[in-house]
Length: 69
Image 1 (cartoon, rainbow, N blue to C red):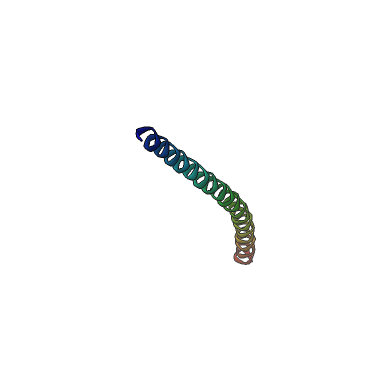
Image 2: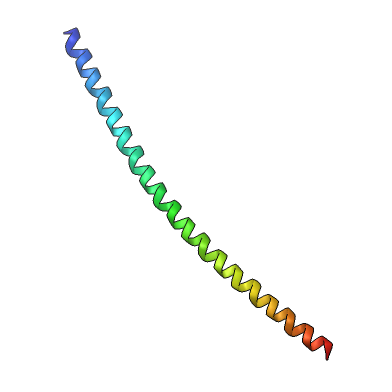
């Protein structure tokens, strides 16, 4: 009877380990997708900021030209 309990415990433990492994694998996959999304958004934000800086510099030039007249 003792062997049956220890085999049952081992099988339960193995099932738990497999379950945790699958859950962690799924979570890592989800996090990788989230990282890719954030990196794309970062690239978009950098482009928008670059465009904004260019526009501000154009406004500065226009204001400087008006001030010189």
